[in-house]
Image (tube, rainbow, N blue to C red; front, side, top):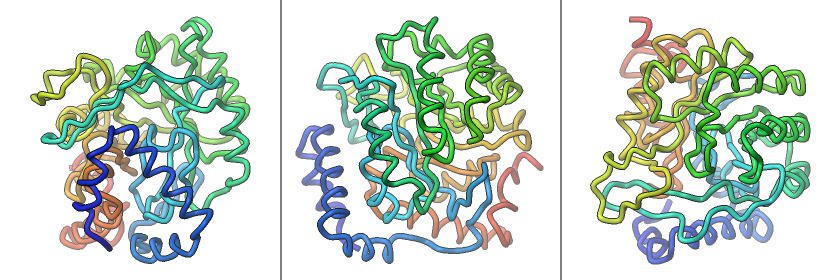
Length: 356
């Protein structure tokens, strides 16, 4: 469609958070001022092929590639991201009360490793404003997932109250919830990745909505712990597991720009995320919906996770480094890989390696 390398060279001259804001404002402007431009983008980027379509979690997913949580924190980019060919959009993480997040700078590029380090800290406009925004846009033409978290000032012993508020307020404004207790950027949040908390959490939020609720886990858990809490979550009512969030294992990067805080995403966590996904899928494939996230930047990597048991995959950092055509590239590549393996539909490929 255009030369993204040139555009990226311009964007990368800006601070990462400023560049993200420019992209956000561009999508908002295109939607409000030049909606015909989004139709043009849709025609160029959206892959429409029945072989990729799935009926999952109570919704139709036209393709398996979604945008992960953290990109559209405040639900301002639905139209632009939909036009770029994503199969589902995850907005948030957002919290009951607005919060500014951590001190800046808090977003860093590890350019040579095609990775990002972020210490954002759930900066968002708060549920009241986001609810006002989403209520004008829901239902969307593709599924919308609400990624929910607790406020920084909310102590862990009262964390469930925040999740209850958000599930109650968005029960009719999303197609699924993603419970975020695995971000490394809110103090002590990851301490909630324990069976006792997860059991109580789901016992209190499941009665509040008929929408699917998905748990997102950290890649830094041991495989045994990841399997244990995922199994417990499913037993407690979780409808799916996202594997995984960002990593705070800084030994994964050799970048001179590496900081001693914040979560790593992108290529540096590809292997870590792939391995923990494989471990969880070996126990939970066929028992719940599995979503792969973390270091996915190509059709080959996406297809590998699909064969491991992922019904859906999510990208984030690769969107920044490879540009707006990445959805089309991954989806068209998956179609080629399906054909090469003799599969008539993506469902035949999902979990193919586990079945073996």
